Length: 162
Image 1: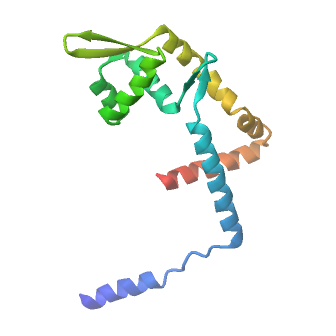
Image 2 (image 1 turned 180 degrees about the horizontal axis):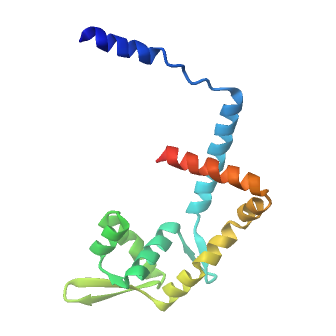
Image 3 (image 1 turned 90 degrees about the horizontal axis):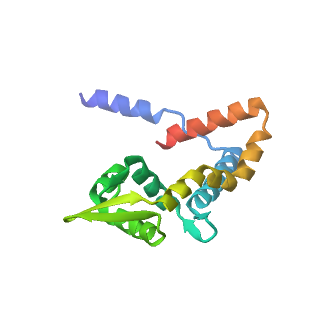
């Protein structure tokens, strides 16, 4: 048995190492820089109604609540897959901005999206579109072949990162 294990180990040692060429490093660095800028863009608040700024986490919380109709904090945290404490902090911000309302029935607190919150959700797609106008314009300028290659690479990188 020991000899078999040594043989399998020696086979692993004979595998060709990955050779990283300078072009690969440049591509990786460019992709990393782009991903960081995109992440920053995704985390910036969205401006609504002139005086309200909502962070993406707040927008996602508002969407989750709107989808359900009304929820308590525990159910909202389960729906979003985050801690009750995190949801509570986000909901407090939404309450301050008058985008969510709470009602109590005994000890139970129910949360519901206000008309103003629904107005924000109705504009959400256009707010994101404004944010990504330059990105969308650049993608529109690509040839069909370039779009296919770009999409293929992005999907492969996404799968790799899973």
